[in-house]
Length: 447
Image 1 (spheres, rainbow, N blue to C red):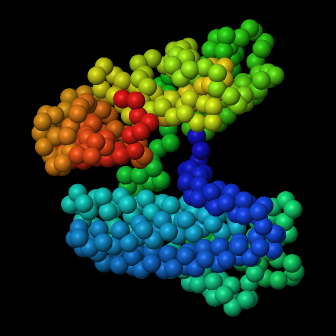
Image 2 (image 1 turned 120 degrees about the horizontal axis):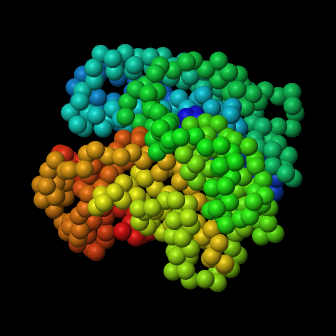
Image 3 (image 1 turned 45 degrees about the vertical axis):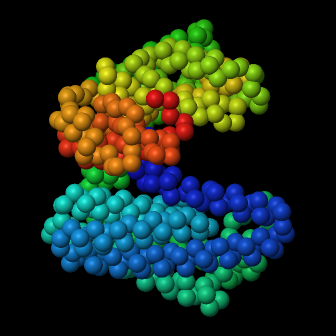
């Protein structure tokens, strides 16, 4: 499993990837000079957005030191949430490598999630306490320091005292022609080299300081040897002894043995966990360029692979068809109750029906034997509390809903239809009837 900061960066840099690709397309269609001008403008805009967003975030946290009552708390941290989100987006656009931004990106992403948790708490009637106000002050000290330094950088950039090196793409010269010039990237790195240590933030969120990265589904399982893990991999792939090559063991929250086999159609890689000998991951380099098999045949191939991998009790939940692949998400069902956090992913090549990929990380990370199997309120009471007028309930079922923080709640899952015929899903806490989640993008769901 990725480290906490790495997970944050994976989210923070999604926007950077999109912008990077669009910038590359622009460069191909135009000249190197126009490309440099384009990036100069984008980076300057990003710096302006970053400074403005950090100023607003600092302002919100300053107010948070004195917030009393749920109304003001909600207003203050709604501002903090939006400002942190905007700052994270701006930061991802700047021409800096991921590792260079690790501390700053991690801080901004955590503050964003922390603020969102406080807004949710206020909505539930939980006001700020003394510890919350103290934390706001500690965070404000950091944002105040960063904001002042960023403002100086931006003023220097606007007045011509700084220039931008920009990305080093093949065939394009960097923006800086005179290496003796003072460069934004270098000054930025100098600014963040001594990034202050942030206070521990404990809340209901995946970046919370007390959030565990442990794989619940592997807890207490006996360890297997590398030889035993290889036999499990061979049986899954229906290979003879000696066909697989060991790639060693990975460490982390779910230590696993990795094996590889090279074929003309592509390399196969499989990971088997040390705890319990569970198939964790499978990757096939071969990707389809044409489609020759039916979707139904692909579903059958995915189901058979799932069974061979030792995963039983799963139901297809979501299905996507992309680039010659059928990608299926399966969810675990314990009797009549589905666990939406207990998912495995299977991808099938639509040219020959081979498995392109398999990932059981989310299931092994989240799966536990639930004791809470009886709802606290009836379906009818939950429906009255959570379904607004104008929606027709087509079906209802009990479901374990797992939030991004890892918190699992027994819910009533209502499939609803609007007056215009659109489908949405509403999850209501099975103890209180309060809405937990709403899903409107239901085009790929199969259940």
